[in-house]
Image (cartoon, rainbow, N blue to C red; front, side):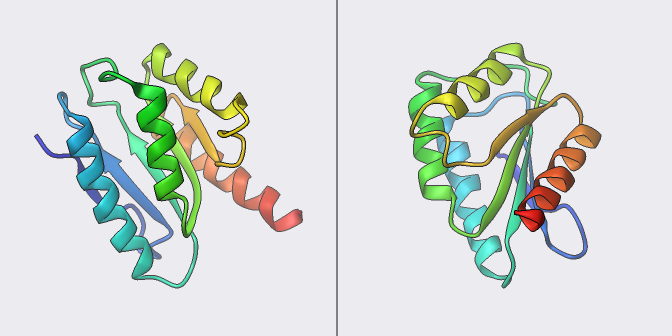
Length: 131
C-alpha cells in the first residue's frame, strides 16, 4: 500500500505523509519524490509531517542508513520534519540520528500526536525567526 502525500494546510506550508499499516522503503522513496515536487511548486520553505500513527509495523531493515539518505536528499526547501508515532523504537532512532555529527544539520523531531507535531513546527519556526 502506498504512503499518502498531500498538503496539510491551505497555505501549503506543511506536507503530510500518512503511512499505511504496511509500507516499504520503496514506498518511502516514492513519497519523498512526490514531496520534493510539491515543495518545489511553492516559493517558501515547507515543513513535513510523517504521520506514522496508522503504521502497524516496526522499521524495515537499515533504518539509520535509510533515514540519513532520505534527509540528505530531502533537505532542499524543507523547514523541519516531524515523525508522529507512538513507536518507541522510531522515537529513539530519531533521537540517535539527531545526535550524530551527520544528523545534527537536519531539523528532525518526533512527536506522539499530530497536535504535538503542529506545536513542534510552530516552535521551530519561531526559533528560526528569532535567530
